[in-house]
Image 1: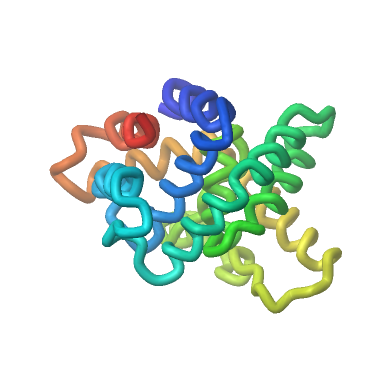
Image 2 (image 1 turned 180 degrees about the vertical axis):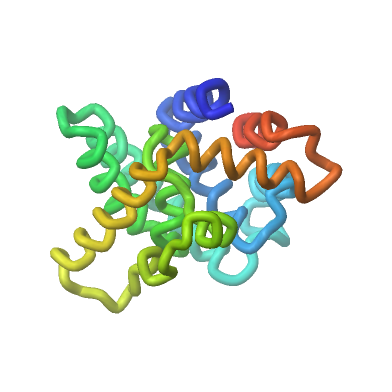
Length: 199
């Protein structure tokens, strides 16, 4: 699943700033939503922009931030991606870039890294239970001002995801979600829509 669909999503997100912004928007729209409906929500926002009924709460603010800063964020992301850093250091640097996006905490910034570069991942409620993860390892308060402390929290999150395995997190989540609704054929179907939602 990951090996089939994730590289296609990476290629889409890396193509240009608009694709990157759409990938980030898909992540934002997934917050507190049923994954099955996120594609329709993304289509609605693309068509109706700020008039979309799915840009509620902070999602509207995040959408505006992405539209204003997408070229800057994309160029920073691509600079990190094309650097000579190790995958771990690339992941930490990408997380630092993506955490600038209003509305993204560690798990969703990790999801964006996974979608854009095949690194990190999203630790959701299911994963917290499965791997007995301390919820405090998933939080980075906006009030934290220390650059060193922020980096330490990001490094801990990236290390956690990479220890479990980015591919494993993806495949296990897709398989798990497919058992929760008859709308899904199987885990491969869940995995595939990560890509088809963006097309």
